[in-house]
Structures are given as C-alpha cells and as structure tokens.
Image 1 (cartoon, helix red, strand yellow):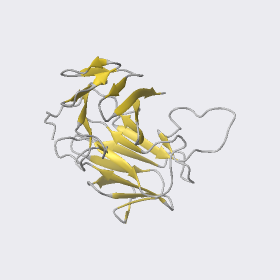
Image 2 (cartoon, helix red, strand yellow):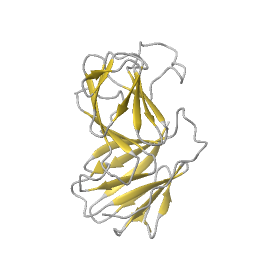
Image 3 (cartoon, one colour):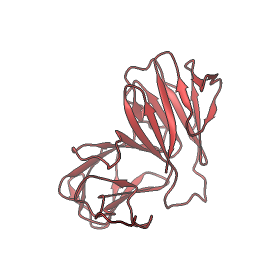
Image 4 (cartoon, rainbow, N blue to C red):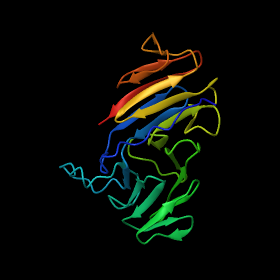
Length: 219
C-alpha cells in the first residue's frame, strides 16, 4: 500500500459549496470529487425557463421524485452526518433532524433512492458515496468522493476508487484547494514524468502502462 500522511483541513474552510472535480478513468467511468464540507442531494426540481438560484439547487440532482434539496451530507472533524430536509432513513432508522453516518451505512432518501457511504482507508477522512438503487444523477457519473485529505485509486478494496486492472496505486493529495498526484508507478502528466508529485490542473491527462485518466473542473 502506498504510504502517506493525512493532510489536515484548512481551519477557515467554507462550509458551503466547494469546488468539484471530475475524474474520467479509461475503462472504468466518471467520478466526482468534492472539496466541500457539505454536499446536498435532491431531485431535479420542476422545469423552468429560468435557472434556480445556486442556493436552491442541489449539488447532486438525482433523477427521482426527491425534494430539490432533500438532504445534506456534512463532513465534521471526526466523520460524517446526514441532515434530513425530507423523508430519510439511515441504517433502517428514520432521521428527523440529523444522524451519524458510520462506514457502510445505508442511506435511504424519499421512497426509493438509496446510497451507501464508505470510508475504505483508516488513514483518510475522505469518504465515497456509492449508488445502491438504480437512481442516477442528471449528469452521468459512477460515484462521488468527498475529498477531505487524500483519495486512493488502485486495485484493492482499501481504495476510494477501485481500479481493478491497475498494477498499483495512485494518490490524490488535497493541499487546501489544490489537488496533487503522487504514485510509485511510472506515470506521466501530459507527457511529462510525474516524478515525486505534481499539481493537477483542469484538463491534465495522467498516463501509465496500464492506466489513463483525465481531470476536469466541474462548473
């Protein structure tokens, strides 16, 4: 396993919306990585000729009958909470206000939308949100990572994004609002050697003998 140290969160980090990056992984799919401490989940809302105010739209709009802002997943200094703005259950129990999200907890929103939260690495506060029901966001995506400090990509279950065909691990490290890439694999970024690590920018393509992915900023 690739060794690393946890990078603490910035103390004055905003608790509202934060940057969202998209990772397109060849042969695997598309994953979102959010730097925000709060991520809202809801439905697409009623169709309108005018776009909703940013504070009214959910970060993740599901193709479902959920309220426009149905629930919020909040990262604290120790773990994660679910704030319910509509009918919700965690681990089979109704949530009237908020509930703690333990690793592996099943989140049920509305009548049929189901997610599961996973914290696969004991050395990282970052969490992955998996789709359990068939509901998907309005934009095609295969999973979401709430990036607190680090994100592991690799072939084992201890990774936040499991890439079964890779020969080793790639590590994303969050340094404030910047994303850095490190790996023991022989990788290039836009054709240049990764070396001991490199900051990733929107549009960067990381390649290796058996892997390739692209980073983009989501508006």
